[in-house]
Length: 288
Image (cartoon, rainbow, N blue to C red; front, side):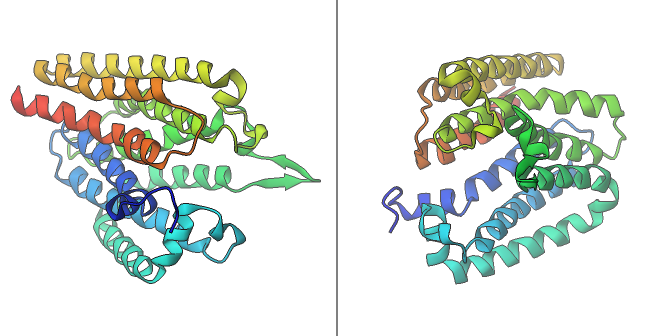
């Protein structure tokens, strides 16, 4: 059908955005492990997974009637499975809504600004034929993705801790997660370099692929250092070692990244780093 991903399971993981939805849940779940009581945060992690699947699904289904629906493999797949996806996206969205409803009073002050930022970035505004707005700010694309992801996966779960967390603690822990997501966002910018609008001024468009890789390497190293120091401080010596396996995986992928649309490399392996890092850390927590 699409010529790029033949395996039906991989199609669901990639084109159905199942893996990226699981990554949202994995990152949120990782935060919940270090709260005083993480039951509400784990409930949120399930809701975030379902909500992520539904959100991506809505954007794809909304593009079914456009001309580009015949140009992209993921949209072709969605069109071929349109009826099934309407049902699954609807069910996932409803389940996420029900799970989130009791939590909303505690998190809406964080979630709404993130939704507004995302809307004003993804929507292209023009004035007298010239682009205006957030999309025109150099380097903002990857940074905005990293900030929104980190807030959703760290700040929101921390707000659900029954023992109220200090605002500066929430900000600090959220900032610790930014380098990891930012590094991976830069790798996706490398993928998109040939097709991205030069006005976006992404890192690889400005500094080239080599410069973008160096930036991603540095950010991954900073993130790994944060995690190791954090886990050592809590006494999780084994986890401070095992989590490095996830980061080594990220370093290898950074070295191999190229400006080509390899669906498996980016949508499975690179996105998979967001699952691999907490998973490797969890193994160490269990062992230690």
